Length: 442
Ligand code: PHE
Image 1 (cartoon, protein in one colour):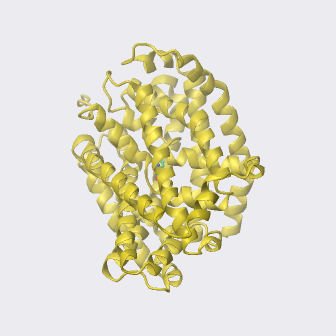
Image 2 (cartoon, rainbow, N blue to C red; image 1 turned 180 degrees about the horizontal axis):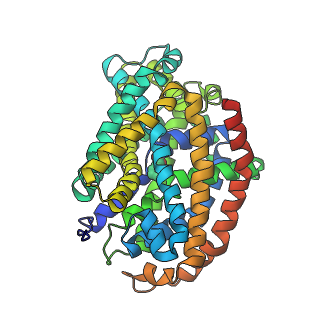
Image 3 (cartoon, rainbow, N blue to C red; image 1 turned 30 degrees about the vertical axis):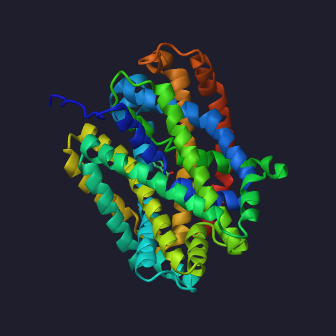
């Protein structure tokens, strides 16, 4: 079969917005805030920022470089530069796409459900019990399906007409919503301790290897790294993008949104005296505490609640699209399927894989732990070794579209030594607790 012309972004900003759309999602709002509040607040934030700069940024550039250079979906891209021995890593990437989207869709389903509640009835005082009711079972599955339908429809629409077009509308919307919410949070009385918890690090906690490992996992999840999503988006690029600048913008936007989300979540939680509740349920933290806060705000709580959950939905949708795109692009390239068929069939399989997560938040939590600790950290480790040591001349490919960058040498050093070392430490640290979580589940 003659290779059809590869799909392309229509403009530079199309790629940047879609990549930001992939990065910014539930990771920035739901995951970041529950991890930060569980692991020493600002102490966690400091480690997260450090890992993002030293490992996340170089690995992001590496992924996009492999994608653009090869013009192929993950499995073939790795084969292109490394030979058949590297194909299995591509398969692991695709498997991660299946795994992550299966539970990501369930959480996104909760956010749709919550937006509907906020809009139609408002939150009552009994939200804590309500979360248990909607988080697991047919309700959870139904809203997961709804979310998956939206995701599939966008991916079936193609790179330009679906993915890029949705990101161009949704990303600015999310940003405006979130900034408005942060400003509102600043007017709350009693929010000051929330800011303190969030922004004043307790240095004794920063020194823990366990928190470092969680911060690394979060940095990778939030930047969509270690499973080929950014690689796939990079494969739709032409030769004139300035990749170093663009990766910087993507990281800046992702960190910025996580930071602003924290400026919403922490003051609200503290202003309504819910700080000690957050630690009780990790996965559900945001879904239990925030609605309680919205409930006690009265009428304005409904407006704020709708806006908050709407921005979560928006973020989740553009991220889910990139997860599905990894699977779909591989199916198109590997099996010769049409985009529509690949999107609907693979999307349906992933929706079905979400069933256990829809019926058990414990199961969901464990899959999330496995995906991050093993797949993303392991995938990131393998990819940095690949680009640092196996790929012939990554600097030449990264330089295309730039007029030569002085710190490409530093980039290569980070990829060769720093990223693998730090990721290996994070991975080794995470393996026992991940194993324990799996054992506990059964
Ligand atoms: N980065 C997304 C988020 O923060 C999640 C994601 C992970 C998307 C991996 C694609 C790949 O929500």
